[in-house]
Length: 254
Ligand SMILES: Nc1ncnc2c1ncn2[C@@H]1O[C@H](COP(=O)(O)OP(=O)(O)OP(=O)(O)O)[C@@H](O)[C@H]1O
Ligand SMILES: [Mg+2]
Image (cartoon, rainbow, N blue to C red):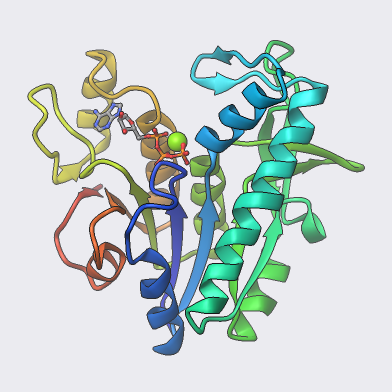
């Protein structure tokens, strides 16, 4: 069976001079089944500011009101997703853009009044993804969930990537971000991370911010047998190195 790899492309690495998209096209050519989930937090912040819609963070999550959810959907599903699909096509690959609303791919529900239109994932329907993968297409997923019957919700992209990898029983899950991997209190790379070490780093405040949802998603996926890791997506060739099993970045271990 060809390898299925879920790749989370951080908004933090979008637009940098990396080779992630050409690596994805090379994987597709080699008969593998890559799936992309992307972020875009910085661009959402920029558009909310331009449109003068106030945004605030509660426990690291963006509180999303009725105006903000329209901007989130517009930026992620519109601008970022379309750009990625276009660039993959320009490199000779075949990709289709979608979000969790499409065909009920990612179902979700609101869970905290302070957060507004932010979703907690209730299910992943892999049917559409599997048919795209069977057709040799790279699905490129914007992290927006569907609250029945038709409300889009903002969901952290790391969480979506972890749940999609888990539902697909992917071979691997790779988080491409703007740091080498998880760093310890001295700023040194943690090459292998188990649950005990993650808890200790989190308690001491070393593991924080955008790394929290990534590490949680890694362990959720790892529970389902997915090989999960985090690496620096701004380094040329990084995706292929991680996908080929090279010991680079931070790998989750049992
Ligand atoms: N212990 C840690 N080791 C490494 N990075 C950490 C740590 N704690 C917090 N961080 C922060 O997490 C950031 C990566 O998460 P961030 O959410 O900013 O990026 P991303 O998820 O790749 O992009 P996006 O959220 O736009 O999809 C790093 O740039 C770093 O500032
Ligand atoms: Mg992030």
